[in-house]
Length: 191
Image 1 (cartoon, rainbow, N blue to C red):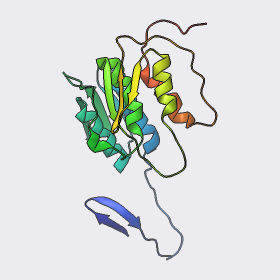
Image 2 (image 1 turned 120 degrees about the horizontal axis):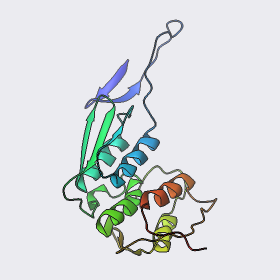
Image 3 (image 1 turned 60 degrees about the vertical axis):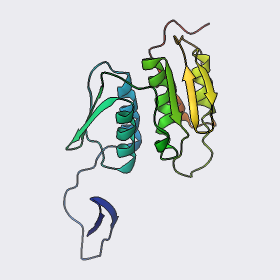
């Protein structure tokens, strides 16, 4: 039996009554889907993500994209994301601390608009996961980046290629995505 609050499953209670039998549908990983949603920011047309879970981080990421001027539609586990006619360079401070996705949006917003602001990140308390790598990577690619009391700002007329070393002690997956999401820089990395 599932306990529902505002249409969201809060807990599942399973009482033994014999062997479990049946079929279930398993949705995709929210950690993968939220990053795919950010990657869609670099597309010139609609991007479709299938088998998306219905969880809070996906809802928060969709709201951040919409606040930045992207069209987001969801139906039956499918998310479609497309740039709007006017992409805005700022993720509102109202998203401060809700998850770690804003730092990943910094590169795509910078690429699309030449400037960007994202609020301070949050996320699960699973240990230290600084954003320094993301900022250092953007600087290496040619961006001017500064920290403020409510978030991080960046500016760049053009990004260029750079050699970036991933720190083995850092949040590797997020760091890798951050560099890829900056994407579309011009020119090769220096030798």
